[in-house]
Image 1 (tube, helix red, strand yellow):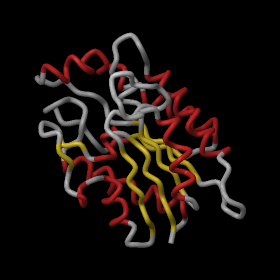
Image 2 (cartoon, helix red, strand yellow):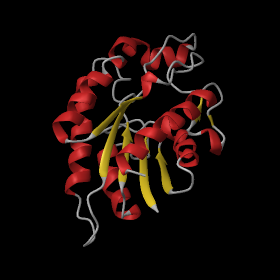
Image 3 (cartoon, helix red, strand yellow):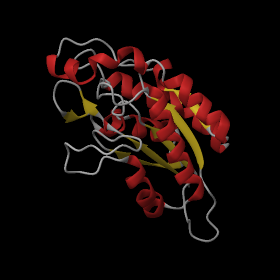
Length: 212
């Protein structure tokens, strides 16, 4: 059985806009992907609300820096055949701190961590699929508009920068915005239909990568 690590933020965790609850198990994109693969793969959900690529978050007691968490998860879940990384929205939510380009630099570091990790003997380095997150959209929610309303245009640049990182590093790339649209309830998270649609769209992509 193939093993896939789905490493991300609240979009991978399954945050339900407007409720702060989690989408049903079967609707979250990692599980929709697993269902579409027909039981031939284990897809490991590793999403954390607020996770960034490489940046610390001083307002949260939990460690949100993806570069800190990823090596532990690579060790925990090895052997892995594929690592899917979708991060970046939380990198650009703070005004004047970060751009999509900076998030792409963070993704580059995560790629390096996957490629250079000290895996157990006889375990191969997993393939990597970089996924740019859906675009932020306008919202009437005052709190979320204050959080990331400034970054709507910036979020549209993820795909361009991430595709370049993927090409330069021999990774695979998928633009989540090509199939999923954020819920205007808060402007950034996915409703049940869109997170499920994302997982379903990844099925042929992952089958092609793993040749299954």
